[in-house]
Length: 252
Image 1: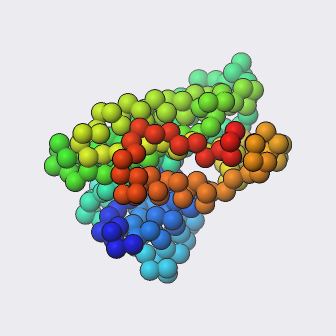
Image 2: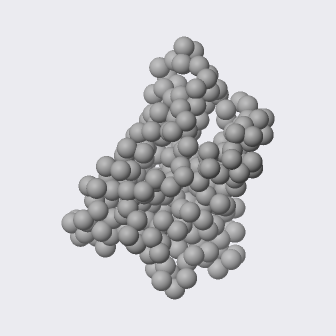
């Protein structure tokens, strides 16, 4: 824990699900944690209290990562509250009710791509500005949350979401090469079928159980299992890991 005691990680979309689990795991590993949220303020503050009661340091900040002005305010908050930034987890993302392409309108597509792609780009941009040794920083780590859907395509459900995560895969590979010599490691995690609230956003509450037989391990994963991988990638134990896309999908 001592090695991370002065290090700060910003986790976007961290009020629930994988983001919240990652905040708890990072705090347990000694990181100071900035919990970003868009609308679930009570959950975010409850998470801050949980971390503080366990002896960790955390603070919450509201911001829509799809809004550039709010992203700038988020990073200004990190600067003032923690003094520096050592890692970013680009976790914030949205999904919409299941639909075939022929029924998708432009507003849906723009919203998905703005949050899932542009939001990750904006947050990574601001993190690189603060961490790059070329720009006077001390280096750091970025973990982008993708999805197994980027490989599977999600036909008949949400190919827009899957495509946005495919973009994140490419972004991860490109950025890792762009900033690797500047002390920043960039990696991606691709969760598979994980039990989180995001399934409710698809409008298909039984989706997890319906798809469970397709998972070779024959079970649904947990947010904690994904969080463990994320925090490992942030750590010095993964010091020579960059440009990796880690599947956490039970073999699917």
